[in-house]
Image 1 (cartoon, rainbow, N blue to C red):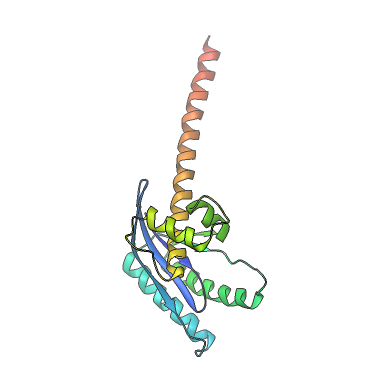
Image 2: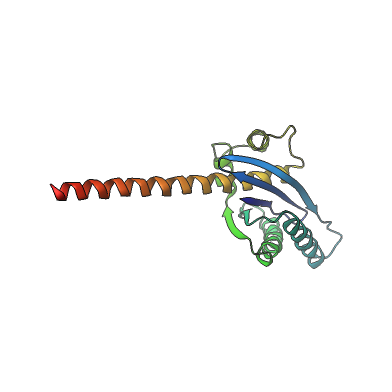
Length: 182
């Protein structure tokens, strides 16, 4: 499976492409779309849409893992992030990607093991899980790769749980059938 992770932001939208094969994951590429406050909002959103569309077309992910917006103290920055997130989702939608949305806490939990991890811990784990020989920079790229790793981990866990449940159901049915036959 090829996943594009996206860390949305109006000034910096990080993206990372992760490929999975079973439990193995590797980073294929990552980068950051940067816009400047000197440009009008519609121009900035167009840049995010266009650049992510190019990345999606080039790497062909089938799934996008995008960070949900965290509304903290600064609603103004949350609105700007929401605009960028919308442009990113439109780019993914046009290319036919399935969407997985995760909170920052879910991403940290899936990658580091605790939802209260700091940026350094996330970067460290992303580097190790993906076998990189360097820290992905800027932080937006590490966060985007973390979003992709989160989706891969949670998808794999859900698949294993479903297959395990199916096996348990078969054993349960077999035991019930044997019990009835006695």
